[in-house]
Image (cartoon, rainbow, N blue to C red; front, side, top):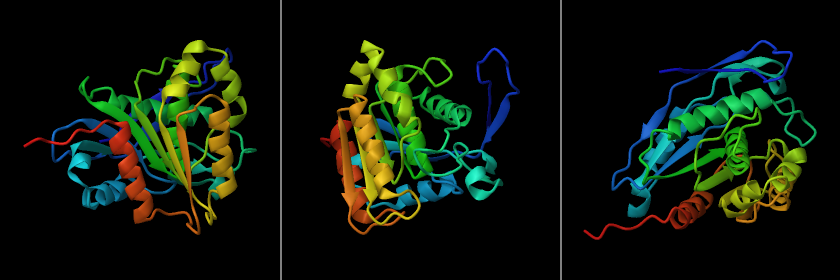
Length: 262
């Protein structure tokens, strides 16, 4: 089932709104007591199916079987990085660097879609967001919205995020983040308490390692103190079992998953 969102830029000139039609959402249901829900976001040109299959078939210990995984599919849109070729993307991107302009409208639409997916989870279930590559960038953007209490367009962000994971990603909006967080005591408090786990391979030839490292530094200096950045020597733009094992262990601890006594 597709999900549509209409977003305007919120300025006085009221430019034409873009329509974002999200693709199919895949769900991996918990095999034990449902204690946490994680939305996991794919990379550029991918879809929710590939990650749902990977997560379904991961050899997970009992504690991780208490997690419900939601794997949405991004809208298909023209992407400047690909010369305008249309593919699934959480936002438009011209180049993967800190000098590239951010597609705030696309980022807000995707962050709102993710929040909508989490909004119907039971109150006692802890919620988190993770992703790979552009999915990681979108998860990290959601973390900044959660800390600031609002999207880039000023609308309220409604979800109490408990953890964020980003693999081989980057931070959108790094240049203005620190001033935004420091301008609000509540934002600074939320930023300091939100656990974030970032991983990056030193041989990544798609999202350069130093950009991932700079993104982690920008988050830290903006007040996101509960942050871990792990580098993986020789790893390219993909995941490996060791990385997924460390993500699993970190999530288990941060989400406070409890073992069954039966």
